[in-house]
Image (cartoon, rainbow over all chains, first blue to last red; front, side, top):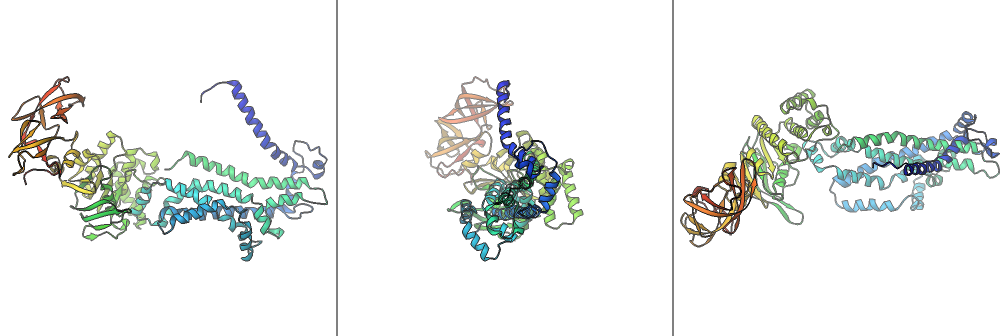
Length: 281
Length: 358
């Protein structure tokens, strides 16, 4: 669009700027709060420029946790990391293989299989949480990483995404590799997988953040404090009934909780753009 | 090297749709066979059955002396060039060509030797490190052919390989394919809907329609002596004119009251019975009179540069005549056409079969 209307442009920028401020200010506030001691925050006159307690706050939070919730956030981050990575990688593995089966193999009830997968889209964890909890508990998987990760791996989003992508790959490519002497698995490994890289990256970002932000499920199945994830940790830092909340620790935890998803997005975004520019089809 | 033999090959799709209705064909070792026909005539299906990409519903496909009905595509010792090239987008040109050999556990130095050799033949040496998307259509086409060559197969299969190229490149690649096939001497089966490609490339031309073979022969035979009306109108551009006529007697037919002599006419046709008279636009002499002649009403003229096409009607039927430019005035409204008895083709209106001498 070639246009030059200064007022319209000004309004557009103003709207954008307002939007950014609305979204970014609370984040900024959290980052600032993580650099002061509790007293400064509590007295209600917290400055909007960084304080000098950052080092102290972060070391303490990562290694020891709060005064009341004495649980090092470093451990929580590790738990969250294992859970998010487990969910993201597990989901990609399962969904790429099931999409491969649904698209490239003819077997009885293939359509039925696909529709069953599709229907599970309507059943997120929250809906099936009691039966899922029961199964996980009966399998003795409470307070384990397997219990945290496994139920969240099963879902249809990834399968659908890969299926749609596989459908756009011309059949001739499969036929050419058949003639070139590649069997099903080799076709998958040598052709489908390299072509799916950008789709995998996209799914990884979505699923990593999905896994990292899980609240209800880890809350249900973890009882040991050593198995807690950071998202639950934030809540723990705030809820203290008979004492003042250590807002500096809570905010530090919040900032730490934000960090990995932000890094994943920033890092993977470059891969996205690369994938978009070099359309390989 | 090996020839290919098809024995009453059938393809029946789900829902009882018969795409190929019992095709028998022998393709000699080292020859270039072109399957031509309109879309949906079963030519691609037939090729894909030879390649092993479609199951064979009935009959037998032999490569050399081996029946390959149940053999995997990879083990049939064939190579195929696809219409959209089907190059692996994420592999370099070199890897695209080497992939089939790697899968066959060919030694590395042998692969390298063969790929370099093929690249030299096809003049794609400078592109070996590039990805397919960095190549033009013509270059991709060469890589696709290179992928076929390095395998040194017994049979090359081409599935409309030139239809994605522009007209100029198509002519150029056509010549190169022909030259390459001659040089390598590998049996080739080539599917196309383009009759010019079919005529120019083939040693053996197979015209198909409705899942069946209409005619097999050398291009000259098929052009000179089409066995059915379908072949007559399909091969040749512009297509052969078909006029309604009646039998007058031995060696004579009448078209709209005008009598024409015919050399190639079956004996014993009942005088007065209906017959179809085929005349190629390039076979009639416009503006002159001969032993037999027809009169034509001209509607309009198409300029083709070296030649002109006069469109009009003869005896109420559409008719096209080709004449050298300048031979006739462009505003000619009425034409007299001299007809050489040797160039008249007769067809049965019912069976559409040729009514020539046995």
